[in-house]
Image 1 (cartoon, rainbow, N blue to C red):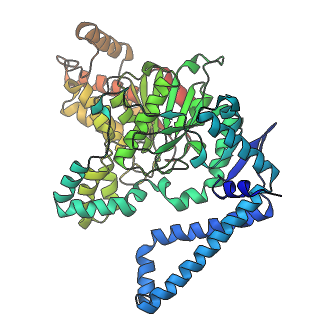
Image 2 (cartoon, helix red, strand yellow; image 1 turned 180 degrees about the vertical axis):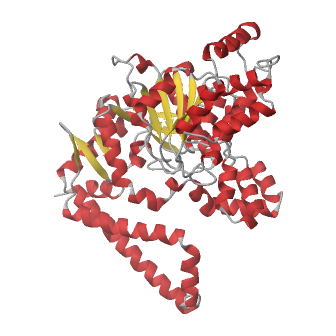
Length: 527
């Protein structure tokens, strides 16, 4: 029988998903708790659907005559009925939890952690370790790292500025419309992983993936608090004590616009022997907030600060690995921590604007441009051209997402990213002949590309000798403005293609196929 205090605590206590004894087991709620959860979840799903279909709901209510006094009363009665059902369901769920021995044991450990965090050391310093033997609602998960403003200078913090927001809104009618577009459905089109419905449908898959990372790959979950008070869900796999010499290096994985660390790119780097830190964008999975640029920046800043100051990896021990739109997060991190060991981007783009314009009607071009530039200016090239360290790119030859024309490799936006990086780093190598040859090289793949390169008769030792000689005389800081001066157009072309091949490799796959570990190893070994 449950006592009254336990009953009231269970009204607001978190939902329990898994527990660990000798192995991870799915928590089985009793019939009362299961009933309460089912009703509450159903109502919340309809609430989310109503939010996404608000215009249709309003139109339906108007057509049915509910926009009147009588209609308002009817809607009020309906809302009251739903409220009563919701309240009753919470009580049923609470009683079910309070009478479940396994849940009560979890509640005791959660309470012990709360007391420990409040300074009551008698509760034992293993309280955090004990609570990590459970998987439960992220809202109740303990915060283990909070962004420290003292570590960085004030100008490096990116709070939302109401002055810049107001000035952008009044600059043009498109800005006002663009603001509402981006802050309603626009951000969800750009980052579908932030949609409540998608997160609900994938919740079990995410939980299974999270348990797999913890149980089979040695992961540990952390909750981080950003400067704008969002909470970021992260997973850390520490291989510094393993036999792998790569374990001393940390790969920070940034997922795509519908990717989650639970089922994303982390295993590729883990299997390669690296320590790995994965995280979910704001609004993805259990992370709070929404992936607006300011929140995305603040989340990345917090993840990097956590890696350096809490996990104790030096920046030159960190490799940034971004897939798809995660390439933007990685490029941004490289601008904030320019001493990182290297950047690897897979199936990413130079600038999100051409991709956004390609998906919208031409008459909306001005609105799309204004909206992207004001509120979602995801410009990977802008950051990477300023980065001084090693960069490696993966281009998917069958990419249906990053290409302006699906499966047309010459329209892959990764081509434009590579072009911008090379032109910024080696400007003297660009001439009419080399530009044309590079464009041809970028339009080919597989054996056609190999045959094309063979026909150029590039001698790798000669190219390396030219690069090494220049760096020894003028230094290694980019741009290497003089590299290529004095060379014939043919020689400059050969050197440019040699460099292009060292920066980018092709992978014969579509956009979402997991990157093979061997390919990642080949890329990371040369950083």
